[in-house]
Image 1 (cartoon, rainbow, N blue to C red):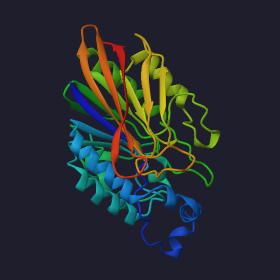
Image 2: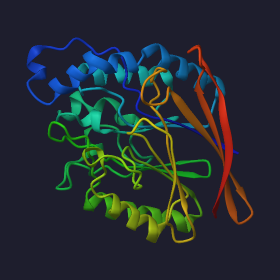
Image 3: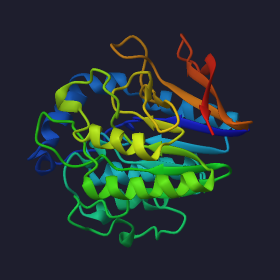
Length: 311
């Protein structure tokens, strides 16, 4: 059984020192939100406890579905790069960016380039060439593809700078075309196709300002090409949905923030481990949820269930 761990939205704390000129844009609203509320929600000690629990569980691979930073300061990317490096090697961890990681536009070397090794495919370079700019909102490197055991991990980017007040995301026509071709080819290989993106692709009542703009385009690709599992973050809550695929429903899972403390509007920190194995004409997925203990001291097994999808 292949063990795939999934956490999201770590929003790594503390926020580095902010220079006044760095707030002369959308960052000011994010900084204000952090000072007023979010710094009490997203706690570094909780994230570090999750990391320790994850190491103890020793999954075969780890995926992180975005929002590693808070307001996309260059120092946040360096801080997050150090945290990822301490968590594990880039061939053990796959990352896709979230809207907070694209809060404002940054040069590659100051922003997402810091994590290039964690979001490059097996056959892609991990430097600036990994995000060759094209007319499709700079998403030339996505989707990336990593083969791990029976899995094909397909990483997408929904992250793009948006106006103040918006936390929306988009994939773009070029990325959707590449996704369709990749999923079709992987389906012919008989791989278990796991798709990663930050924004929820299902219609789960998420607000207009936080939506995936071309979610229907993603769902159309899935209906035609298929996949076995879709993982996302973004709304800091559990999601367990199904999207139509050519051979049956495709499971879609979202998880709360990996650093969230208890006693707020959203759930406290959780992550999930998906035990994946082939069973005759189906794939069986055992979903193990691990959550922050009520006293905040470590994590425990909160729930477990099983799902099957056609092979």
